[in-house]
Structures are given as C-alpha cells and as structure tokens.
Image 1 (tube, rainbow, N blue to C red):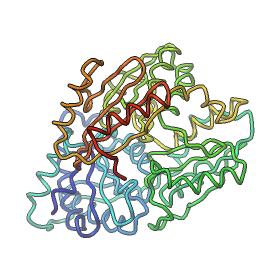
Image 2 (image 1 turned 90 degrees about the vertical axis):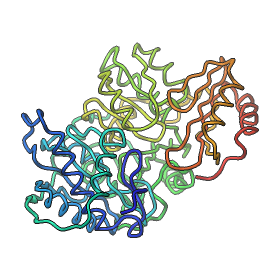
Image 3 (image 1 turned 45 degrees about the horizontal axis):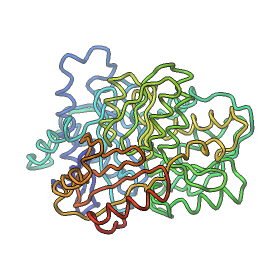
Image 4 (image 1 turned 135 degrees about the vertical axis):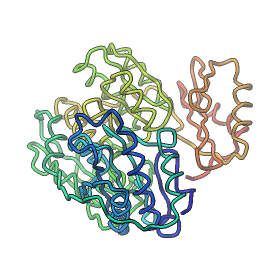
Length: 459
C-alpha cells in the first residue's frame, strides 16, 4: 500500500496505481477497528453502535472499492449499512439518522476521473483527519500483511433518499416569487440528488446541465476553477435565469454565479447569509475561514453576531462551529456548515438557503451582492516555494509593522490592506490571498509580494 495516499483530511490517490481493492480492504479493516475502539462509554443511545455506514460516488471504480472496503470491515467483525450511490453530505445525515459509530464515503471529490479515495467520519459525523484518527488508521492498514479473514460482519442495504430529501427540504421556506435556477452538476452526485430533492418544489424551475453521472466529466468537477464555470455562465445568460450553481463531484461544495454570469466569491456568499441566519439566531456566533474578505466579520458585527475566525479546513471549521454552538459557517472553498445539519457541510442545504434568500427578496442576485463588493481581492494564488517556513518568516519580518498572527501560515493586517500566506500540506506551494480597499492598492501590494514569491503557478 502506498502510504502517500493518506492526506491531512482524507485518503486519496490514482486508481489503480496508488489506490486499489487490496488497499481498500485494508483501509476498511483498519477503519472498522479504529471506529469501534472509539465506542467505549458512548454506545448508549446509538441505535447501530456496532455498524458503519458505507456510501460511494459515481466514479467507475467506486463500487469495486466500496465492495472491498466493506469486505475488510466485515473481516474485522463489523457490521456495515450500505447506503449506495450518494452525495457526501448524505453520509453525514446517515451516520446521525441511523446512529452508527461512523461512516466512509468512497469519493475523490473534485479530482479528475482517474482519482478515488475515502472520506472517513466518526460518531455524529465528526471528521476523522490526521490529528483525529487517520494516522492510527494508516498505521493499522499499512501493518496488515494480507487481505484474508472470515466475513463475520453483516451487510444491510438501505436507501435513505426519502428521509434525506425530507431533512434537506425542512429548511426550505415558501418562495414569494418564481425562480429559474441553472444547476451544473459537474457530472457528479448532484446529477442524481438535485432532481430527486428539488424536482417537485413549487415556484422553482430547475435547468440542469451535466447531470449525467457515469464517471465521465465534461469538465473536471472542481467549481473553484473559473474555466469550469464557463458553460454555467452561458446557460444562465441564455435562459435569463435568476442564479446559477455549480457543484463539485461529491456535492458537498458549490459555487454561485449571478444572473449576469458573474462569479460570487464564497466569502461574499457567507456575508450575504449573515443577516438571514442572525435574524433566526440573534447574537449567535458565525464561523469563517481566515482567507475570507473583511466584509464577513463586518457584516457579522453589524447584524449583532459574534465573528469566529478559523484556520482553513473542514476539521477546524466543524470543531469551532460545534464548540461555539455557531448557527452557520462559511469557507472560501465553497463549504458551508450548519448547526442544524449536525455541524456538517452540505451543498444541497446551501442551495435551499440561497433559494430562501432570493425567494423573499425583490432584488436580483447581483443587486443583493453589490453592497458586499467593498474591497478588491486577489483570490487564492499559488507559488512554488521549496523553503516555505523561511519565506513566511521573511515576510513576517518585512511586514512586521502590521498586525501579524500565525493562526494558519501568517496573516498580516494593515489599515487599508491585508494578506495571508499559508503552506500547502502536500506540495511545495505557498498559497496567497490579498485584499485591499482599492484595485490600485491591491496591484501595488501584489507586485511587492511577488518580489518574494515569484510568479504564481496554475493549480
């Protein structure tokens, strides 16, 4: 087994060169051992405490990997509830709905078709990452010498589509106007789930593109790449739609374009949802990642909430959301988290809240966002840097007259501009975000920073 497939937050690699059925069996066996070991003292109240949920996405190799994963779990004397081909947020729902000790989704999320992987969750759908158990699973899996063992565990197949639809739509409010929405499913799991959940919603016309989900992609299922939104933009304009939405492969993230086809940054979408959530949850905390525009904390304070700034990554966002009992959280990557969704992220529930905001307003999407476009932003840029720590230290020294913190990489804040530089977990890259009060100041400061970092690379 290639140990490099174990990442900071999940397991991912190229099939079958880096990740195959043998590796899946061993990972299943190790995950079952780990998740069951975490049950001590917590069994009471869990209807299926000795069981693990398994689901998979639409990739051509996902069913075979899921089968091997389940066989490994059964060989570890663990029962499995197979919930079939689903979007990743449905896994979070299933773990809580069925009361299992955890679950595994077979998916490579936004990666190209040749990739696959596993997202592992514990009880209550808490993420299992490198610091919360993935290193233990890696140690157990890589120590296994063979894939032999009696299948002592059982397998129960369960279709939760109806229950999941009910869970998602319980957040939907009646719309005061007819809405036309274009959905680019990116040939991923949204192609199955969006029609199933939203197909019969009143006052809503869905125009779907790239709904086919057979493991082939018209464009890579990564909505953060601007070029992947071109088809969506064109259809939105051609059909005179109110808004366009593009999901990633496993439908836990989305990007939004307005009726003119202009991309709406996910930090601005977070800021848009701030007054909506604080009206329902006065004084609540709202969590945002530190790459987000300053418009986000400004809107939270303006509407009487408590801003909680957090480092990048779903494990950190979910923990802070839970610890602060925040009603909502948003991340620049397109993940949006909800207290009433088990503190987990959901692309489908984000679409619901977007429909609620649009459906109760007389304004267009671009008009709603316009007041939030107060600053000039670079977006995230990647730079190849071998000695990442040395470069970050040098930047902190050069800009030491600003307010410097090291919550995630380094952030330096001045009165009229700020930047964050943080290292990639897996590559020799530094990721840069810059924001300024004017486009001219942004251009000036970017030029300064590039003297240290060089020219950005495509990523």
